[in-house]
Length: 128
Image (cartoon, rainbow, N blue to C red; front, side, top):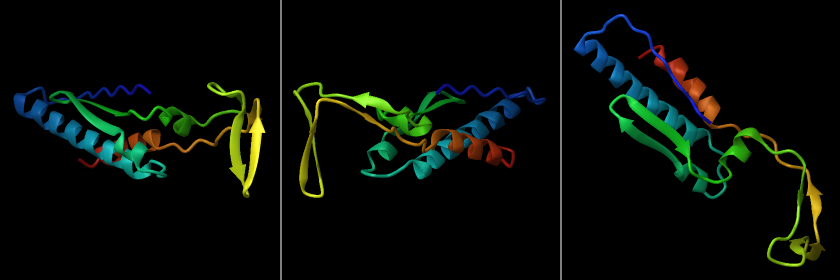
């Protein structure tokens, strides 16, 4: 997910530019904290992988390093699963063993957390 923000402002003075940089820093912090708050929690891994990186003064990246982040953000469609290292998949349900050489799974519904965090942050930015 790539987010670009462009700000037009009248005050081109040093104080005006510094004020804008401070507001963008606060905005990045709000988006980061909202993404962590909204992230689905099972083991805290996803929440702990959401990072706020300072590229330069006034320039920030907010990202999730969990390899399944996009699957949660956008959901998945039905797809085929199959064994990679073994001859069959194995799982237990109600104390019964099940095996499969491959089968279709229904996918997961989206559980967005980054896009809503961006929306919340931008709405709050108007009040900075």
